[in-house]
Length: 268
Image 1 (cartoon, helix red, strand yellow):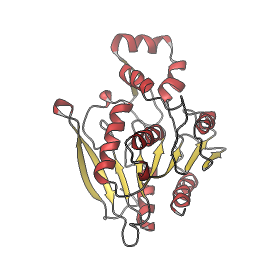
Image 2 (cartoon, one colour; image 1 turned 135 degrees about the horizontal axis):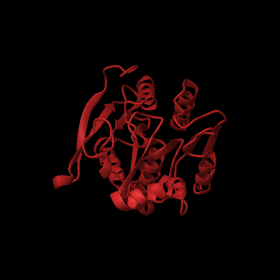
Image 3 (tube, helix red, strand yellow; image 1 turned 30 degrees about the vertical axis):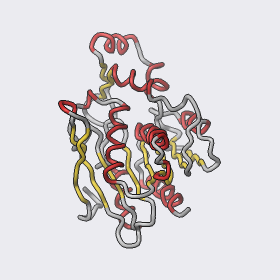
Image 4 (cartoon, helix red, strand yellow; image 1 turned 120 degrees about the vertical axis):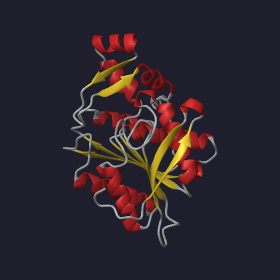
């Protein structure tokens, strides 16, 4: 992986039971000398992205340079992890995220979520606080976050053909500019998405939140980020709008904003 050194540990955690067991691939970087007192960072990728993407790699590299621990992993059906992509739901990927944090996180963590990973991060906040583990949350950095994207952004725009395919086959496909294979969206994903909505009430993070959103994002409108802010009651919430930013937000200038947001939280 370009830009990385050889201090990474490749490992895995087993999630599920019986026929539903899947191996979740994980990459760990230790905090290094003097970094143990600083919050670690956990990368939460987007739909069909993986931990070898540019933002994930740069976050890990920066963590190494600044003496922080970093956890990266692939959801089931993504990247190096096992399991079928078509079995994926928000609940399933949330459970895997919790399992990774339970197994590998040491002390407070900054959750860095990209696109769908922003939704997963917000659900992790709710689950960790429900479990009485809110002290693990040092902050959130959300890059083009897509909370509730199935019900808020996709379902209202579904055409007759997509709805018919969901009903008859349980899924539909659509081309994507982010790779050669079409995206697959299942009926289970939509149904489970309704059960995991976060934009129905206040989200009490109890830690700083930084949101970075492109105004030229074709997938997640920038006004969606404004709506998310309405559900975050803390005063310590900041939104940065990038006038010419797209959904990837992977340019050096975009990544610099992400890393500065992480450093700003860590410095508090």
